[in-house]
Each structure stands twice: as C-alpha cells, then as structure tokens.
Image 1: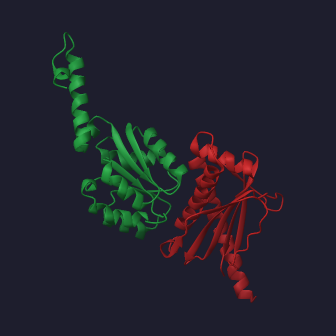
Image 2: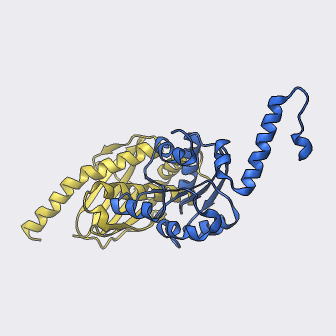
Length: 160
Length: 166
C-alpha cells in the first residue's frame, strides 16, 4: 500500500468515525429512548448471536453491520416495540431496522455523497457460528457502544 | 335508522351526538374524508417491509394525537395498492426502500386506484437525500419524514394534512 493511499484511508476513518458515532447515538436515543455510550473497541469483545447488515452501493460501496448478543437484540426489540417482542423474527426485524436507520443516518450526514449512494434492504443473520467476509477491502470503522451495559458493535466496511 | 334520528325526550345533546355518529358512519362509507377528520377518527394505511416499524409508526400517530379508527398495514407498494381497492383511508404513511414495489413506485401508481386519488401520502424513510425528497414530493407525496423520527415530527408533518393543528 502506498503512503498516499494509506493516508487517504486513515483520513477517511478519522473524519467519518465521529459522524458514524453521532448517527448511532441519534438512532438509539430517538428510536429506543436509550442513550448509548461508546466504549473502547479493544476492551470489549461482542458475541454476535445476531448480525444485521445493510449494503451500500454507488459513491460509497460496502456494508454496515450491527452485531450483538441475543439478549441485547431482544432488549432492543422490546424498547422499539414498547412491549415484549413475541418471536425471534420480530427481534431480527427490529435489529435490521436499527441497522437500516444507522446506515441511512450516516449516509445523510455525508454531504455530497448521499445523493449517489443506494442502500439495500437489511438482512439479519442469527446464530453465532459464522464468519462474515466482506469484499469491502478499504476502510473499516468499528464503534462499540454500550446499551445499559450490553455491548453492541457497529462496523462500517468500505471498498477502497 | 330513522327512528334513531328522532328527538329523544330531554336529550337534545344526545340527539346531536347521535346525528353526528350517523353522519360519521355515512361519511366513512362514502369516503368523505373531511367529515371523518373533523370527527378525529382517522383510517390510516402504513406501508413498510418491517412489521416493527409499522407498529412504531402507528404508535407515533397515536402519540401525535391522531385518533385512529382503523389501521391497515402493507409490507410493500404492491400489497398497498391491493389494500386500497377495498379499504378507504384518510392518510398513507409509506417507506421507500422495500422489496417487490418500493415507495416511489407506489406513489407513482397510487393515482391509478380511483378511490385513492387525493389521499395524502407521507414518506417515512431512511432515504433522506435532497433528490429523494424532491422526487417523492414531485411524484405526489405531501410530506417527508426522515428515520429516525420523533412523535413530534410525525405530529408536525401529519396533522396539518388531516386538517388538525400540529
């Protein structure tokens, strides 16, 4: 990797990390009524019982994932519904929508790029025994937040 | 029905309410939106591929002070067009990114359903770019709310379309 390319990638990550952080905070606070606190990525390992994904294509190309434990996903669904989620499908649906809103909110904050970027409908994987391989080989920004002490990982992987 | 309209003994107010109730029922049948809105009884169609989001939109409408008489749900534009052929509604709240038929295509096609012409459509979506807003509004949508949204935003964008103060 040349020095210029490495610098450009680092520069993107540095400028987009706070934007992604803000997008995450807004979605959790507005839709769940629960403020989230960012935590250090190195200190926390998030077990991914549920992983929601939304693809980006166009000016931004890659995938945004939201990953958390089953109990956290259920907590998110219950907070969104204002009631107990009655099925695993509903829990997955809720996490997919959170992922969708974080991606859209992040995209809308990137002036100039949002016009030329399309989002996929969300997909959700449940069960922990899998590895996610994204073809996006460029920037990877991971932000881990705590929702009432439960860690949630939000990862944005973009093609270079 | 006629007997129900006859004045009742010492019950002028009750009679007035009864007349209103009958008129409301008649208007609901003939899709006289204006009168239904005056009565604050709203029939809404919520279109979103997420069932959780449909519930959130319905709750937000209630929190905004909309007295919902009936809520129909559809998970994409095609389902919504079928629903509109047999159900009268006062307002439509529609997502954009959906499988089968997306919200933009739904807005373009809704005028083909005779009974649905003129019903206000509010887009509720994560697609918040200027071009999407312009396209939706020029296709016939009357309002645009970006997700994530608060009940206050729903109030601000939906109530004026129902002739209610926001």
